[in-house]
Image (tube, rainbow, N blue to C red; front, side, top):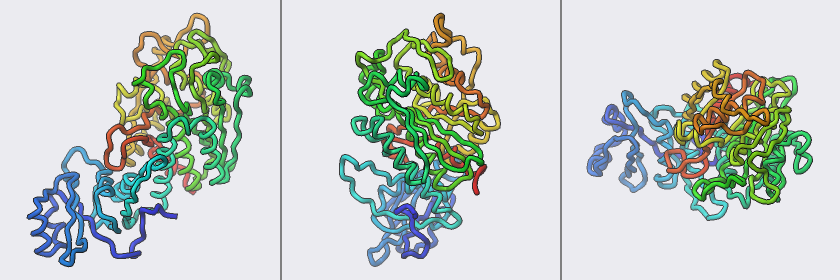
Length: 460
């Protein structure tokens, strides 16, 4: 089933969208008659990136749309720029009359730009549809758009309506949709097998849990996704300031990313045995909260001293990664809104990637570029492991000195994984200022890149 924004060629007459710049403007606008070209000139339209003009026909209907994009020799091109059209065009059916920089990504940006979060406030229907360009797989675009919508909806939902119970319900609904199996370990049952998950979540009346989804044939390559599901993070007893706590509803963005990617994989029926692990907790403040200098065992047997209760995400991931590693899958990928240090280093739009697998890093980086879903590799710099030393336990959960925080967080996680093909993605999961194809609010990062990579490897 195609996304409602997409239509098939020939379904109805479609208004042409002309992608223009200084180099092709005269040639591209030859489809217009003299009156229409005169209208564009009188309107003062300049073929600069991001500018648009709706051109009327003589009878008052739409003859076409001019939309400016970068020239071929400009160093920076935004393949999602056409996504801004969905918010400015009149209702109707449209088609690409000529090629943008990337027709597939331009079409996808239409769908992603049309997203609205309307759970708590009614949003007006946009009623703008697009004919799927020739040689573009509309079904695959739909799978991707559905995954992005799922992640955005989950992350945008405030924590009063998106706690561990609700996150589990969303995971179960997705599993039901695809015929996957779900198991959950929660509450005090976590103490024996997942003590770090229990420690982080025990301060909240909303029970912590580990959600475990499996799908596919056991004989197929095993791919395991792990998503940080901290449904709200106060910082615990090392409480965050109000500015740091404001957007902590998005601290389950890693879990939303894993579920979104899981949907894409299952909807495409890739030849893998998929597992999705989500440690879902709320890091709250109460008499039962875990404390600085507490020491806890982990599933792997490594003892952890708590240097800071606000470094809770790596704790819940540690137990989940240990479980993932026990199966020796072909790939483990974890997603987490883990460190502010990654944002300081790379900013909000460029997630940090950590792996020891050079080939995997190169493959995923290439996919990120082709999918307009960028990421950047940072090093697992082993000398920094000494920053995690503890005098009373096997490791501390935070480093001394306050530097290299994204790297030391990744090195902490590395202690719980033996697999070479392990990928840690430190994401932001948020767009602070709206951009083409990316409305303000929740954002899915890195999943489209990984989906492209896995599709190339495991398509039936």
